[in-house]
Image (cartoon, rainbow, N blue to C red; front, side):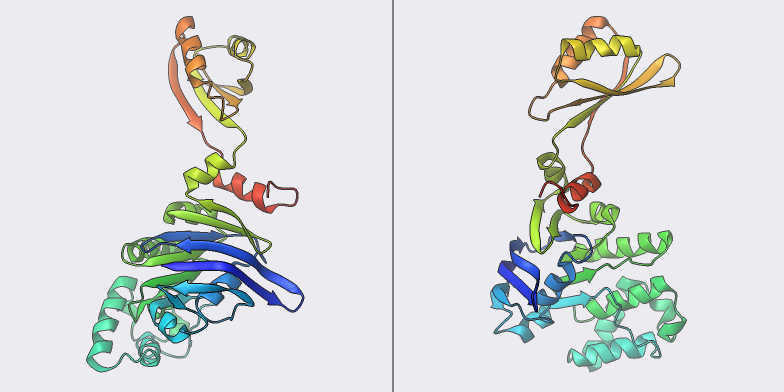
Length: 313
């Protein structure tokens, strides 16, 4: 649905986006991650036709941004990091103003307004000036202006920035609902948000794409070690014998948890799966096992490894 090919954006001598390539499929919720200054917002602004690429191309449903910007803008709803609100307006007047710019008027507007207010939970505040609303409601108004024209694509840049925990949950639930009927690109610094909402994650660093895939794929591809967590009625000395018998399994953590049971963590190389060997060893010793599961590397660890200086880029 959206294709970026060899996309470049320069600001003078600074290259903000450096020959990136990826596609976004219809109906997908894509998480776009990167540290400050990585090129996230610049990329989103080029997709929305707010900025022109220095080189490369962007196509949206076979429309190219260079020749068909108006057609592409009509398909996209955009909530930038700075919410584009006119605070002195009421919610109703503001959404009518935005709809008017989209050539949505009369009965068409009233129908679109009714649907949008219901989706965004704004029924109780439609007559209130926007400046009197809480930050959470202001974000809802920002989302409302992005969907008033029923776009196929929704682009959200840091949609929960500055919200309290309850407001964050509310906005995430709203995004989930919108994602059932639209293609969504979500840029966020909050990794838990991306984990909760996104089907696929693209990580950009210093203008280049450094990772692309589902959370499970990223944690598997970019991990150089796996962890096996046990809850078991064996002592540290007993469990150390596992490492002696199976050298590729290293005991890295041990702590008492309940009665005679202890928690132990072994690390091993993912390409050399030692779980069957460890399980058979425990079975031979006739130890009681309460828990036995693999713990994957976290998205945060993947992100740090790919974006910090000296990371695995």
